[in-house]
Image 1 (cartoon, rainbow, N blue to C red):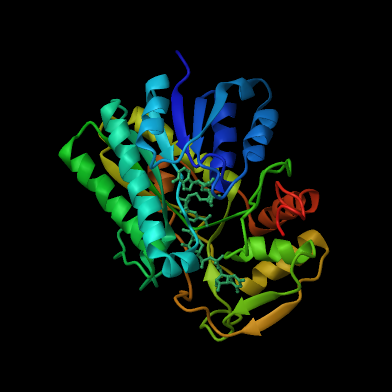
Image 2: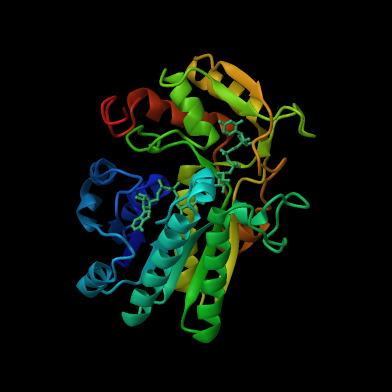
Length: 350
Ligand code: NAD
Ligand code: WQD
């Protein structure tokens, strides 16, 4: 059987690059579309190297999804069997400061993509949604049926895109769509060659800890010590990025094998909650580095405890996360210590 062609938007980014590597290893042919707004082409080069022989099945187009003409050229170049759509801006705080940037990039980008898919008869999609759509959940673990809310413009783009997907599937039953709600992706490929390299000050916990450990920042600020949790700090469901990438392979399998699927949503998490202080302790153990802490008040908009119900993904996608917190920290440190400046250099980050 001929290898399936997958278009991956945002494939140069953190989760995208890990997923592209696994797609190549599973025998898929991949075209990445990315404008490199928050990533580097070096990630693509490293994925090609890591994939060995299968690296020849990857091509890259530096295209902004909102550029209809260029995007249509990509679709005209090949018949795609499915699209995995990672591309988007993801910094919560920035989305509050610049809502139009987020609505334009994430919503217009997605609509342009869906139009191009329709025009070229490609109607299978996996979309990167987020646990952010649960807001401050009324109960944990978060099941897929919980009420949804948006605490900021970034989260609202995820809610709207989920709705758009449900609407287009209702309007045309040929569409098969899987919405994956990721919890907190961390870690890196065990080779230490690819990992997360955020531009600017990291918003998320693990990249911040990593930059303290390599000496790029002096201390971690712990946001909130008075939550009703085991040690007073916020609790989240951290998931190894390699497990997350596997979840996308499982979702594609479902799209190709299940004729009855319409638009389905799955959580991708581990089902376990870990506090900020537990993460710091595990990272210190994995790296042998001391992480100085500044205890501070809560970060506005943060929930207290968020973790996933994993039952639906386990039953229907036959997927479950395999890595624990220590492996996440070990692989994060392996990436950080080999690449203290990510894909760049001290100059490129100044
Ligand atoms: P990332 O920033 O590393 O990757 C996103 C990629 O999309 C980047 O390479 C960026 O250059 C590209 N991109 C952005 N706008 C684009 C556009 N208009 N056209 C073309 N390319 C564009 O982020 P990530 O952590 O890999 O996240 C991937 C997806 O998963 C995003 O949609 C994000 O919202 C979602 N998500 C991430 C997390 C997380 O904590 N990392 C959690 C839940 C959901
Ligand atoms: C985790 C915990 C913080 C940084 C965000 C987005 C969500 C999703 C994942 C995309 C919290 C604490 C953090 C720091 C800290 N992304 N923290 N000091 O807030 O669960 O989710 O990323 O969809 O949409 O909102 O992740 O990594 O920012 O925070 O104490 O410097 O670490 O308060 O308890 P969060 P996070």
